[in-house]
Image 1 (spheres, rainbow, N blue to C red):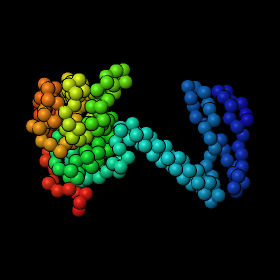
Image 2 (image 1 turned 30 degrees about the vertical axis):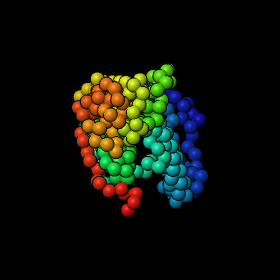
Image 3 (image 1 turned 90 degrees about the horizontal axis):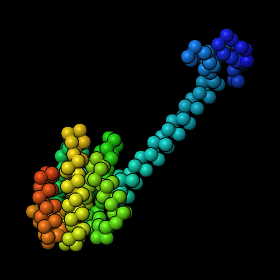
Length: 246
């Protein structure tokens, strides 16, 4: 290594494949000359070595990207069976959700409601939106005993970009306290939305929105939930056939 006025530069070195002498490359960093690698050699051996290194780097990048994607999907709560979900309406639904539209999907069992909701949610997730998925019955079970854990759960569901609530109404009437907390969740998302951050929701259900009041709770919270959903979601009726029976 030889000394220069502004730094140290190594001496030329031979190519490991053909023996050609390669000059060191330098760059100027804040007035200091720094070593920046070696002059590339164009011999077949050097070219093959570079190609192998690039392939290994790409594989490493792809593995890191796949692992990061798996973590995002896992954190979203989308069930494993729906993590490769696809539906012909998914792209359009994701576009509407990204524009801030809430969607209420309802239809009979097997009509593809959850598949469509998850397929659209996966597109939104790939596009950089934060997504949370919750099954209504499990969520209401969580909210029956409200404590610090449930408070953190609701905070996370309220702040995500897109919330998917699956099978609303199938669980039967919830306790008044759980129904009130579910309304608080929908209401918090409604109150926190802005033009830049609309916080839409996708709800799937076997029942029309008008039936939600009695299905979720016999009290005032059920009526409030139905009212809020009517205001914040567009009603979409799925095909009247069970895809699982085809």
